[in-house]
Length: 104
Image (tube, rainbow, N blue to C red):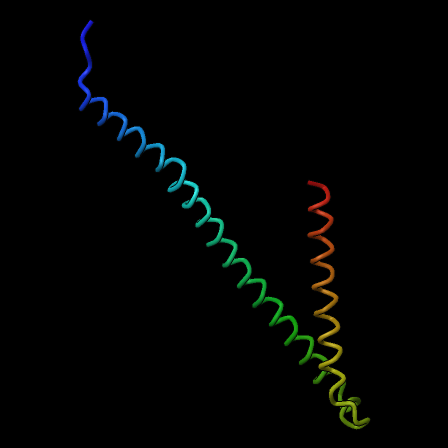
């Protein structure tokens, strides 16, 4: 039987350790980066959607109700209604997430 060279064994061990380290660290970090990229984009679009929905509700209340709020001295009421509508939307989302988490 031929004896193996210790230098070759050390080089093979080094290659094996480097490939294992890449497999266990670099690839999971790439996957995590992909999740973060899409998660941040989704959160940004959700925020923009909620912002524009709230702005739309506010403008709807300010323009379509005529002078109801301004004559009665309740000019802050459209803002309060908008906050309540957005709060209900957030509560619905949290409820949906909690139900989905329980099913898992």
